[in-house]
Length: 184
Image (tube, rainbow, N blue to C red; front, side, top):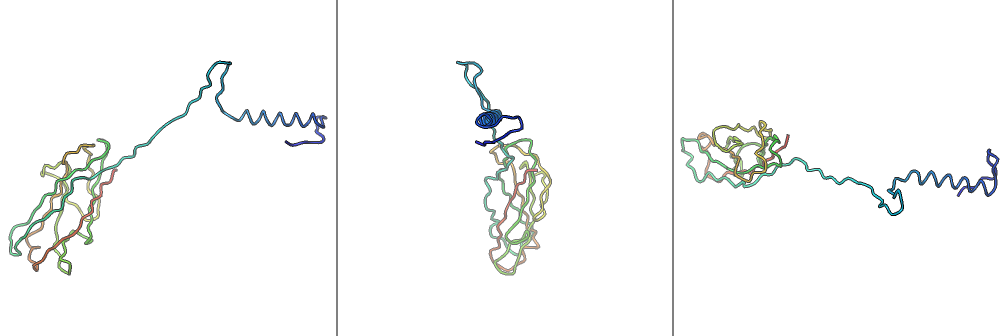
């Protein structure tokens, strides 16, 4: 509590202290926005908002390792493999892109030494093998429209090793791919 000995209004002493204290209390209670009952017996009510924001997101499921098997270095046909998997988003109105990278820094299989086998990879968003687009290493694909939260196998990678790449020393060639689905 603040006490003034003399005020311009001419009020001083204990009366001035009471007037100043009452003014501070009115100002303080006026700033509080609590609910109160208008009449005795009426309930006091107030409101508040509850909200949650669900962000757009994607999920990749059912990716399996791809094994071309044992192939002759004298093979004259391209080697192909298909990996079928699921991309889910939480909205059928989401568009997305797919980006693929590997531990080799490009689309190559490595024998653990200096020998590499290059391959190509295509992504198909509807798993009918009739369309889809070639992927460029580390670059987002064309935009695709989400199938939503379906849990069916709705996507595929088509991998191709050209026959000319097979003319390498014997060994097991591999790489680990990382697939990123980006909501746009």
